[in-house]
Image 1 (cartoon, rainbow, N blue to C red):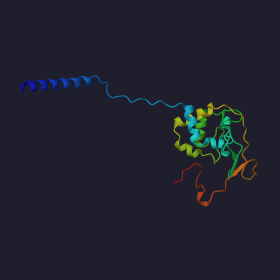
Image 2 (image 1 turned 180 degrees about the vertical axis):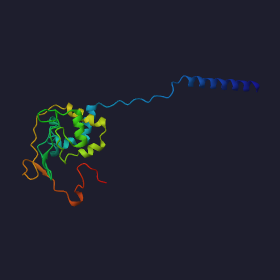
Image 3 (image 1 turned 30 degrees about the horizontal axis):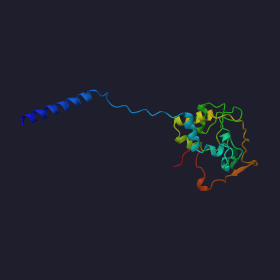
Length: 192
């Protein structure tokens, strides 16, 4: 019996010593694995896809036959509403007809405020107000990087047609809003 007690005490002491040695060898709190940031161009392409930018800005998209060789180069299909007629502009980095002269920060500014570098406001049909509230800085910069990475395509959209002029070309007409849907404040202001 005495031999069993001595053996149990020795085994217990060895176990405690082993645990102490093991604890002293650890480096402290374990470091979490760092998550690699996605490639901004790939992220930008993903975002422009799920945000439906192609729907309006890629020729043929609304007709079920998108021409992906001219991705985001604008469309000649007009959108008519109380603002007149506008067309989805060329978002490629062509400096003459696209946004090639815009900096990445100017693209981000347009996505967040609806204001272009020349001070004009994006058309009301462009849902920049939705993007302004959901895009963090990394995502907004990723979209800008993706747009800058596209091949430049020369495509001059038709100019805006004011509300009091006759529309020309292919146009989708949006009726004036019913009373319930009439905006009660400045464009982009959230209504609660």
